[in-house]
Length: 269
Image (cartoon, rainbow, N blue to C red; front, side, top):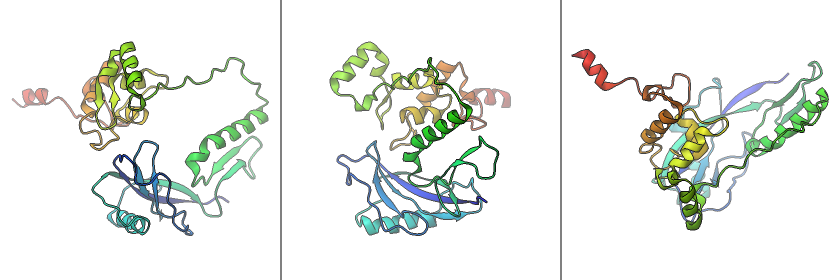
């Protein structure tokens, strides 16, 4: 039988550096709990420090703890003695579904009726492996169902080049084509109004503050959305015909605003 253990990993994220202190991931000696605490550059010019490896009873508990974060720093400094917390912009944690007897259990479900497939215990490097795992499982399912290739299938449209990755000539051309490229919404990550609006209008577009953040990086920088969130909320309202009190952080009941202060004052008067 499969036995899943919730294993929490806590991280620090450091602000952009130019040039980066490290240009490749630094590994420590692995332990029975995983690959240990890493110092790793990201594709966006940050440094990621972590994770811990804590088996916890609640698989939804993504809190960070002082003990866990101190453990990250202590172990990371064995690799990088000069590590400072002055450039930390956020910390966070995530849960890995550790399988007690192994990892990367992929394929037909043992003991289940034919046609049932699974992907269990996907640990490190699960994120890198996910596209290939998805393709392989898709091929198995298609083979089992004898699905023909869809002749009307269209490849996904490539995303526009990010403004912060453009050179001066490309930026001028983008602005000429769409003046919204001339208005910066997120200073930290150099995200423009054009990119925010496209993130909302595109297929499976953003409908929340975090939805815009994950598609554009607006709110992922040093201020963590402190300056750009109000403008992103305004654009969401304009594009989706919402009132400000209807905008959420990540859907559901994660409301940003609780009401209109002017209306509340009038009611109290």
